[in-house]
Length: 154
Image 1 (tube, rainbow, N blue to C red):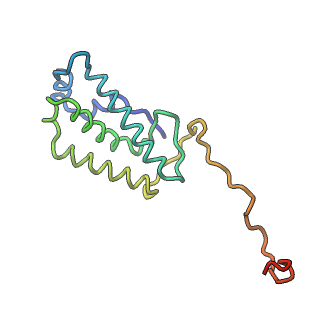
Image 2: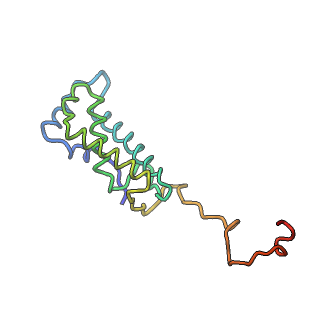
Image 3: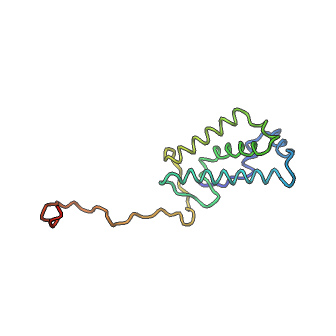
């Protein structure tokens, strides 16, 4: 199944105190924590789709979605990106969170190398259909080649 990363899913990865810190973060003028979270989720979604698309045997789902088997890894990446973006939240970057993000990126590399299987989407992204191989140049039944059958090419 392919899913969309949401603010609610990211918030589920936070403790109550962390969530309060995020909501109370001193942001620059015109900045909103929800907007920054949405931006981090959007960037990570595009990055994950890039890794998935790196393996030619994978088919991408609808725009803005990722395979659900990569949800935890994507959220680990998004949390670190978000916390790095807001200076007074960097204290929430524990070694556990940084290790989770490092492992998530390693998993994405394995996905791109076709070493981690992805369940194809029920509905592929528009224009994402895999091209069918051309019959031109494909070998059919075996024929015995001889000097005569090659008409002097040999």
